[in-house]
Length: 104
Image (cartoon, rainbow, N blue to C red; front, side, top):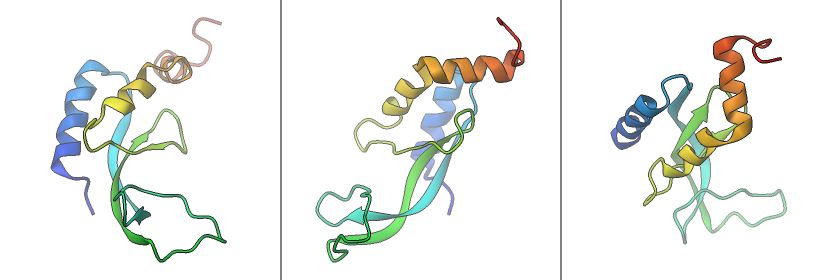
């Protein structure tokens, strides 16, 4: 499924502030707590009777492969913006935009 419109719109606004950065909204099939309605990480020994499985909105940072971020219900994409300001992320964006030898 496609990312929800609230996430797509929020990421579009965020892209205007970070035009060099590469990220996208996505949906990931994941375990979600029946109590908190938030994604949970299950280990193989954990009981699964208090979870449901569903597609959950995530943000993929294309500059930091393997990283998916969960937008918060009240925070929207604000928690992802913290990642965009992170020094290591900024270095990866700069390397992609300016080439790996820039500033070396």
